[in-house]
Amino acid sequence: MADNELKIDREKCVGCQACLKACPFAALRMEGRLAVVGESCSFCGACVPVCKFGAITLVKAEAKLSLDLDLYHGVWVFGEQIEGVVQGVVYELIGKGRELADKRGVPLSVLLLGHGLDAAAKDLLEYPVDLVLQVEAPELSDYAPEPYARVVADLVQTRKPEIFLAGATAIGRSFLARVAVAVQTGLTADCTSLDITEEGLLLQTRPAFGGNIMASILCRGRRPQMSTVRHKVMPVAHRSPGRGGVIEVIKPSSTLLASRTRRLEWLPEITSTVNLVEADIIVSGGRGLGKPESFGMLEKLAKLLGGAVGSSRAAVDAGWMPYSHQVGQTGKTVQPKLYIACGISGAVQHLVGMQSSDRIIAINKDHDAPIFGVASYGIVGDVFEVVPAMIRELGGEA
Image 1 (cartoon, rainbow, N blue to C red):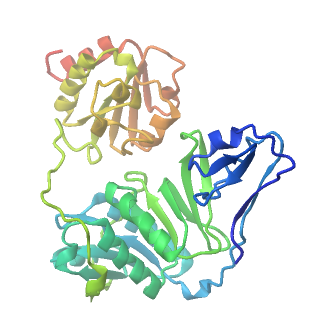
Image 2 (spheres, helix red, strand yellow; image 1 turned 135 degrees about the vertical axis):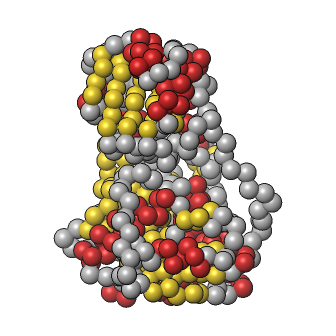
Image 3 (cartoon, rainbow, N blue to C red; image 1 turned 90 degrees about the vertical axis):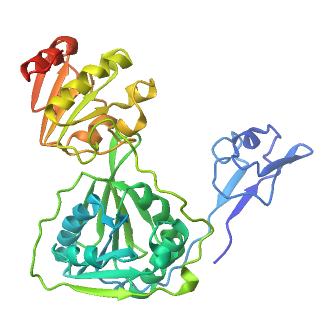
């Protein structure tokens, strides 16, 4: 395979230095009145469009792949666990993974890494899973990106699944990209929808350009097809006892388990109410609340309902609420039974994170607010009148 090459036409270059300013890696320098390419060039192409004289040309190497796609078979779900507890997003991925596997006519496997997870592995067989690959080692008890990535990459290379799914969580995001690089395949992050095309490829859909469009992505020439999926965007799989699934215990090689870091202590996040992602009822506030103190009435309402308090990005950016309460594309994706949006206009970035809620009540003075477009019930009114009235109706003091 030929190397990438960045060419500068000495006849056309006028020494304007626009390319130097555009290069994010400081890979260009001036020799006299001519621009010259340095060794640190990453061939990103940022300099090409800024040259008004057409003096710069980027020649990309053509990759020649010799991958036999027919060798790849099956759908895998990463069984993320923390302190031995399988995380909720895994059960959502099992439901979607089962659907994808059935469409492809292949088995569904869950890859479970850790130590002493026999009970968790047996519980996973209560769901529509054909095989649980239980990777057992004391070094895997606590999550660390290096050994996790090595172990998973090794298994992917030897077992060859055609599809690999993981949650778009802090853990999934931090190590799965390493796996994709190691096995030389693509990775689509933060997917909100997955399907199988007529030609048998995984159709991966995710928000793009700040949530303003939905991009559908295919990985044609490499395997496995890898995706991370946002929590609470897909239904949880139903238990299916007695399906006859199998547990296979795997002891990884010690060479895969080395890590330059170790966990000293686990400090779970402390929130003022119930866990936002797991909550059945969420009361969220936005810029329309005007000041941080206004979230006090939302906390009262949430407490009366047995729910959690959420927030739009605008309120978090203003410092009114901590990031852990943010709902939306750059925050948490939630799917409660009831979502009450108070003073939230409904920017598309926020809607991406909550529009799958079973019931949505929107409270806003602006009858043209986009939030009403997804609301089950809309209340056009002053949030400072409506919310206190709801609190009093529930027996609380506004």
